[in-house]
Length: 295
Image (cartoon, rainbow, N blue to C red; front, side, top):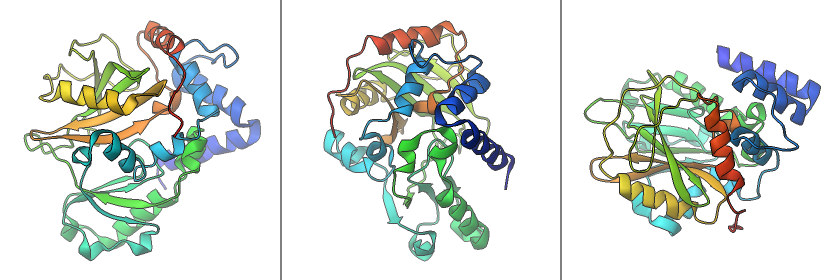
């Protein structure tokens, strides 16, 4: 059990003691530095928290890393999807000997980098340790300590997908997170070296650097993505009908690959610097029409 696991157990104790809503207020104050006004939410984070506490019925389906593939295929085509090697209901059912030598194993009911296992060379992996890691990813109920109940409604499963690697760096490619308000991409958050020296940068859809940070140290300036226009258009097609959604992509030399959709990114706990950005994004959200998508 690592430090993060122990911390999550402690937070669950707090949640059990004070209840879900009070836990959210305490956790928000701890994570981003202010007490949220949930009766009259105005900032982006306050509104995200309210959405999290009253999730829409479709949140679970589209946050499910396996189920969302059908939605993506219907809206923008299966060519945006990663290669899928297997899906199974239990760790015991993973067909290790039928998987390629490199892949990424994901718990479909998890969020962020939790529940993600990178396998670069299966032949060199300690199988016992790998199975133990898969069991932990499978058993972790991500939504419980992040207060995102819609993740708890997702059927626990595991998938194995192709491992995406930037051939120039040997790292996982830059993760482009498109923040869509009313179906329009307003901001692109870029994550570099997600499983190492994890950094972030924010850009407009026209690729102008924004002077802001949230929960990570800033990276240096990043080159304009080769398929910027194409993945912005794809994000907006996926975001059509939603008041808010974040759509993630990887930009490879020969194609664009869908990552995930999230309706409560970072669990609503984005520590904006400067703080005014929290209010600016909050205004965008307040001025956006409610969902027309019903699932």
